[in-house]
Structures are given as structure tokens and as C-alpha cells.
Image 1 (cartoon, rainbow, N blue to C red):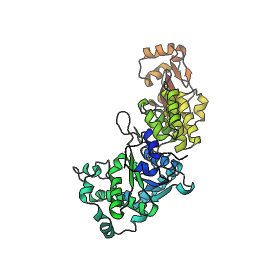
Image 2: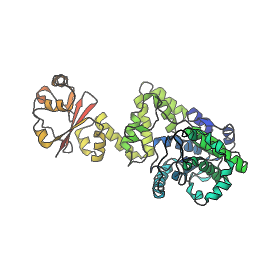
Image 3: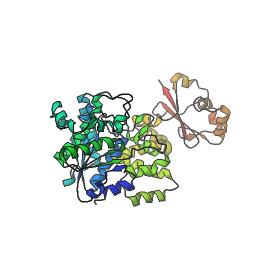
Image 4: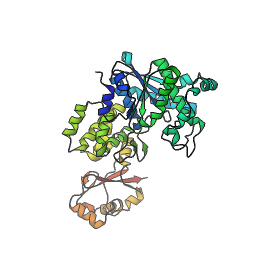
Length: 425
């Protein structure tokens, strides 16, 4: 059912700036709009996913979405939000990156639904036909240097310097909008709030070159409650490609988001209605972990697959569910390694392990507690080895537990604190 696109973004907290006439004009009927994606990697990350959701809601509102992949502008580099010049990518690298991103875009947009079917367009397709002199004469003369220097993406780089290459990116992006306006009937460009300057350069170029009236819309950059950029872990970006961020790590990322960020994340990344999301929040008002599971499950299935979600849940349950040793043995080694890599760990050679006198000595070598503290925990049934509680008599015995996958022992302190022992050949 078509919706009021701008109003949909507004209640979701996804509206930052919008040219005044956009909401009124979009209500008049189906329109064409686009978002640009930078091909600097072979995968989109969850920061890109926030702007991709603009196109998703645009299509759901009955409009036609265009996803522009920057085969040409990717060779130049966008200075927006960057404090230093980026290295230039080879054309072969860009083409490889574009192929990876296309697969991900196709998971979110409907490319076979009639008049408002999504399209992917590549700005290299039109820029490759334009000569440098032609571009300067036919496009460059319409936008002044003064106008371009007033944009934040340029002003913020003036102290450290900006090359003519990156300076020209603004004009190239403006021409993208013009080309899509003339050839695809595109009336609105959307993006993150850091793209407002580039987008409005496009609206101004269209006005000056053709007298056309087009619109601009941006969403807020996604940040955490503490103001930091959202979408990164300690290992870097959270990617949509399973080879770059595994489904298990992707799933775990959402389970571990800050409670304070949940209202925003549910609205930005999920497709459910306002009533459904607010209903979840009321039902689980005292249990934010339930909301995190909803978020993690829906996104993991959508970005990856139901099978990937189920495997991620099974892996997660190894530590935090009612798992058995058989569950560990049946888990594929690469998945098990991902589960274990988050744990404090200590490695022993086979001979070193053989020389450990007692289980208490093993515990003391791995868990940062004194032997007396460990004895108290054992006495209170607070220590497990390989999912089984050990008693005082066992604490004084020589380690003789069967190794998981012939190389691991899993130590547990209390309900949720795990430590890993790895036995190397």
C-alpha cells in the first residue's frame, strides 16, 4: 500500500533536510528518485544500509528508485566527511566492487514490479562518453568556484588542502542528477546529511542548465547515543558480505547494541509499521534484550538468509543457551572458532597440558583468580568444565576431560563468564 514517503521518514527519525516543495510534489503521484553509492569496497556496510533504506521506503510509497553506483566518481573520490585525500582505485577494482554491491542492492529493492521497478545505474556509462573540454564548456560554466567553495565538504578541507580532482567531484555528482533528470525523469536525489551540499549542487545545476525544478532530501547520519559513528565494531566496519562479516558476527553485533540506541535502530532498519514497533516496545519495556533479538533476527535473515540466521542462533546458543557437548561437537569448525575467538583464552602445548597437576591448577592458570577464590567458587557449584559442574574432589584431580574437537576445553565461571583452553600439537 503506497504511503506518504516523507511522513514515513519523519516518524522513523529518518528525515534531516528536505527542500520545501518535495513532500507536496511527491504526494501528487509516482516519481523517480535516486541514492548514490560509493564503490570503494566490494560490499556495502550497515552505514550504507541506512541510506539504502531511503530507497526501500521510497519504492514502498509507490515511487521508482534508482541506485546509482559511482563507477566514474569512484575513480575521483568524494571529499565529504574526509579530512585527507583518498587513494585512487583502479578501474578493475571498481568494477569488482560494483559487482559485489549490486548483489546486495538486489536483496532490498524489487527489480521486477512494473512501473516502479528499481534500476541500478552506473555513472561511468555516461561520463565515458564526455570529453574533458566538452564537460568544462557545457557544464562547468554553470557553477561558480565561489558556489562550490561555500559547501562544507570543501570548506572543511581548505586548511589541509584539496586537490582539483576531489574538488571536481561536487560538479560530477551534480551532473549525475542532471543526466538522470534528463534521461530517467528523476526528480529527487536522496542521501546522508553529509551529502546535502553535493545534492543541492545538482538541484542548482539543473535549474541553471535546463530551468528544471527538482528536490533534495537527506537522512541523519546514524550515530550512537554517545555521538560516535554507528556501524563499526572493534574489528572495523560491519559489512553486508558474509565473507567480510560472518552471519554469526553480524547477528552478535545487533544483540550487543546499546539499549539507548534501540528505538532509533528499530525504526531505521526494520520495515514494520509504527504501531507494530511501538507495540514491541511496550511489550518488552523491561526487557531490551528481547527487542535486540527481534532486530538481530530480522536483519540477519534479510541481509543473509533464514539458514544463516538459524546457524548464527545455534552458534550463539553454544555459550548463552542450553547447549550440550554434542552441540559443540556438531558445530562446524569455522563457526566454532568464531564463537571462541571472543573468549579469554590460554594455549598449552600437549606436553605442557600433561604436566598440569590438578584441575585447580588449570583453573588458576586461565581464570584470573587466586586458588582460594577458585576453591570457594567450586564449593558453591560456581565452576564448570566442558558444561559440567566440578566438585571439590574433582578440583584436586589431574585434568582428564575429553577435549572438544580434540583441542579445546571450555571453562565456565558463574552463569555467563567463559574461558577457553586450547591444546596445540
